[in-house]
Length: 339
Image (cartoon, rainbow, N blue to C red; front, side, top):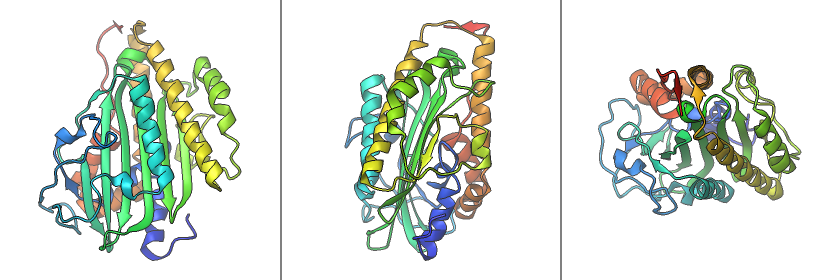
């Protein structure tokens, strides 16, 4: 829990910390208190303002949310959410994008309509969220979500969230490529929770030898954090033994965490692409599907996440968002083998 917060901010922060990405601590929480806006076309990967091309804003009905705001140009939040976030969090988002653009050939990925940009009022404060999504030959979905809270004057309240998950494509890379995930929660210019992992989808829940070797050789030097945190019980079921869940204590550790994420995502992209062109038998593909499904099921079990979403948007919207945006599961490949 975040002891430095007061009132509503503390309540929101506590909920966020109770559900992230690599754990389901915060990922589910980013949109829990928000409102929808913007066309699905804005979700395409476009090099506009650093990839986060804001959707056009338009007025929407508020059938599913208890508290709302008018989504028009008079909104005081910048079109690019990262402009209001704690600087190191915006830097990490940029670093993740740089790695993806350098290592992968990104292609558009479409989410359900009106999920690209979201604004809402929640207990007196407003929240803005941007989702950026892509796919590649190795990854069926890459999702980066940024969220920031601000008051009626458009001033940041000091609560920011970054969430990123990379879902491998079972058909093209098989069961030996893990899930990449990282989350940051910032409260009053302090990162209170930072987590990054390569979560195995294999039945034995172990990383393959080449991932272990690459992590230890390339990323191990960025893991000397002084304030590690304990994983929740559900997280222990899906995260690897290389998972880093920490509270950076100073600027140096914040920078080190960004370097860690850069290296982990880089090696992940490289090793995943090495699986392309290989023949992946049906059992390998199905094992990957089962592993990703289990991961998504565990991430979706956070009752606090679902409760906040239900209160803001209703049960139907919450079920759709969690199942189709945050933790959508892959479909089995009904062939004996795929290349």
